[in-house]
Structures are given as structure tokens and as C-alpha cells.
Length: 261
Image (tube, rainbow, N blue to C red; front, top):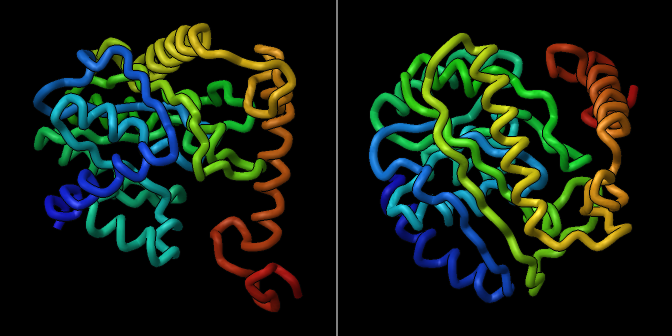
């Protein structure tokens, strides 16, 4: 089912994006393998981060398949896409099965995309990385391609209004040199984060950043939360989730779905 679904998407989505005035700039497309498996690791700043890499990979005549939070399957439309686009749902409480599926598909020559940060960065700086990307690349013996997307967070950020229609927002997609699957997961993870951070700064140098804008990192004169503020907000969210659902993600007895007793 993935083939016809993708063909339909490739026919419909580009004209829709063009109608919004979104402009893509690609750098380093030669770093995306023309054939064979590779893990594409990208930064995570918005709910729209999945789209720009698809356009970049399409420029190479290929397709990629994302790993996605399993709870997103609770949304009917998203669940339809998961099934028909061969996305890989990841249960963050126990992701071993999803990692095994990802490794197998990498070995079969597919391009698999994932976010090593696991969740959106409110500061628009790189968060700490999980080791899943490094472990998958090592297990499958495929390279990791660092990917930076910059500009999508102006369209659909977290905690800020969406600007989906006629946004005319420029988006940059940059692919860095592939990292070979060598060393320990921890060593490869450090190398990946360093490579992505360097690439992020390079992309930002070429992108205009007006002062006092909410989508501009504090480091560049914007009003986005600092990394410390972001961690505090995230911690408060996790504590609220535990109070609401418990550590197992199940609503506590005597509570309704809103978490009220």
C-alpha cells in the first residue's frame, strides 16, 4: 500500500506547499545516499519537521520512512498515514520492537528518519540525544546522515499559533556528511550531536533572524525560551503527566480522561 500512497502524496503535496509560498533551499543533497540503507537523523523544532526532509530525499529520487510516537496512532487520520505510508510507531516506554523493525528495514536498503532528541525543542537548540539512532545504525551497519531543518518552526511551532496558510516562509534543509557506523553507541551519539550542532549553526548563519521574534533562539537575539527554561517546562509537563496517568501511562482509578477525580 505504501507505493500508491506515496505516488498520490507526491502528486498532491508539492503543489499544495507551493500554493502557500513556502520556499525550500537544499544543501548537501549529495550526502543522502542514492541507494542503500541509511538513517537520517534530524533536529526537532516543530510539528512540521517531517515534510522538508521528504522533499530533500525526493530530490535524490528516493523515499524515506519516519519513526513516529506510537500514541499518534490514536488520531484516526494519523493512524491511516502510519499504516499506508509504512511509518514505524515507537512506544517510548518500550521501543525495542520498533528499533528491531527499523534495523531490519535499514538492512533492506531503506532510508529511515528519526529525531534523536525524541521531542520538540522549545529553545530551537539541540536537546540531549537518545542513543536509539546510534544503536540502530550500528546494528544495521548503515551510515547516519545528519539533517538540519530550519524555518519549519515558524509555520507550526509548539506553544505558538500556527501559520499554515500563505505563510511564504523560507525553509532550509541541510544534509551533512554521513557518519560511518563505528565505535560504541555512546561514541557515535556524541559524534552525531556534534555534527548536527555544527550544521545547525552553519544553516543559521545564512538565515535572517529578526530580533525579538519568538521563533528566533535567544542566542541569536530572539525571545525563544532558553534551554534551561525549556527543561523546566518539560519537567513540569512530565510531572503533570505522571499525576494524570501514572508512570505506566494509564489513567488512575477514580480519574476521568482529563485526570480529574
